[in-house]
Length: 324
Image 1 (cartoon, rainbow, N blue to C red):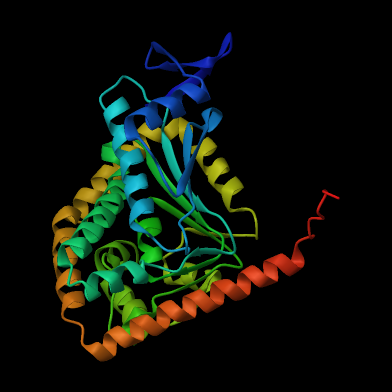
Image 2 (image 1 turned 90 degrees about the vertical axis):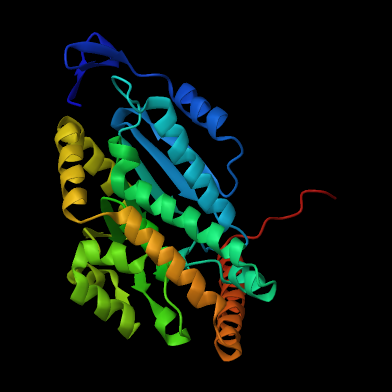
């Protein structure tokens, strides 16, 4: 909806001749958290001047899309919908994602996948894939037409770690970030990459990206059509803020266009369901040699994270023990 500040009341906006009192930050976050419950592996922040709810992804113990992180994001999406869908106005008009640390995401949770394979737990894999698909669908439809979704990627992003971000309406990458879909080299593929990438770069380009398994710089990924913008190092969050500020007056029109383009692109829910079923079936039928490759990748991730932690500890000033 078109909203403009009312000079006499800075926290009040006018919504088509009806006044809307923007709740305080603590109230907005409190309502979401009260409805969503415990939210492990993410942090929430709200910037009222640009009506933006930030979700900071903090998965543990690895920077991958863990089930707890996915479930937390899903609960936040559902809480915003339940709280303000159908209301005359919503405090949340933009939903933005960001990461922390030197990496954005190494993709799906290989350790979880391997545990499910060892236990022949297809239901566990199915639950993981379904929840991931629901998060992706919600990013694409803007929480049922309520919010413009955006992501800034500051570091390495791989495979299934790219898709939830690209499912958003706006995806910006900082110039030092790198991207790639290496899964094909291990007889594997991300859950939702085909329907999501195809919507943004076309079928032919999506097939090239997924079947070649190459690494891309941010500039190269932008040239492929995956990123909407490339910004200087450290400028991703400010770019998101500026975009939200510029888009506020035309938010209603933008949401109408998003809905129209989504209809034009076909039924994403059906495509994601088919993708989930195909992914789980493929995973459960992996041969021992393929499982061994995934185990080695998980070990490589561990060693890489250990090295990065050591470098960070060396570069950071050491805290001195203050006790005698």
